[in-house]
Amino acid sequence: MFSNLSPGALGLSLDHPTAIDLAVKHGFGGVDPDPSYFASLPSRSAVVEHGDAVREKGLIWGMAGLPIGLDAPAEEFRRALAELPDALDTLTAAGVTAVGTWIRPMHDTRDHRENWRLHVGRVALVAELLADSGLRLGLEYIGPKTFWATERFPFIHSLREARELIAESGASNVGLILDSYHWYTAGESAEDLAGLTDADIVSVDINDARADRERDEQQDLDRRLPYATGVIDLAGFMAAVHTAGYTGPVKVEPFMKELAEQPVDEVLADISARLDRAVAGE
Image (cartoon, rainbow, N blue to C red; front, side, top):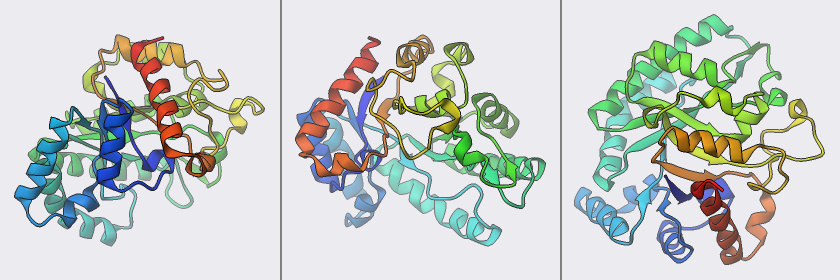
């Protein structure tokens, strides 16, 4: 596995070339791709050259966002689906190998059964297009009860449910985005991660939680940096990820606005050190 710089996940407004330079400077193993930057390049060959240049700097691409909402209204989903092949061609030209999205863990009018059928069909459809481009799809379940309990019908918000959805889709190129925060707020343990392999995991996020809140009081967008409070058993979480033989990116996604107010080099030096600790399994 490798440490990955994801400026957006850190709330940092960095243009793509700057993010690449800072990833190299602070010893990250990878950096998130920027599809909007790819689209600004004059040709597909220029995108290929850009990807080659990033690899020559010793960096690996992290995961791109899936440009389509799995629970979008039907017409919006059809329109995005028609545009997806062109977007995927650009990503593969750059050498990107994975895209990801999150599963909205509730719905106000669609009950669990209806929502399940919708997601199984759409995941299978999207995964087939991704497979044609040699891309994997990562799905992230969302754990905080303060989020999934806000609408009438709760939906997928645990590792077990996410794995069942993936299995039922029948797609071999779909795996998990594992986030220590969602793992913790879902009430899961290292034992729940037992048996996972590299093929089951597309990306890993590490975060900590507030020490002044109980598990079911934690807010999705109010997290802490890895190892900051010790509320989340990151040692156990990462030990399970290591046991799985995971080889992909590990990033930090804390949703802390104050990071953008601090000197960027100080922030990235700190984030890089925390990621190095996780990747080393300390």
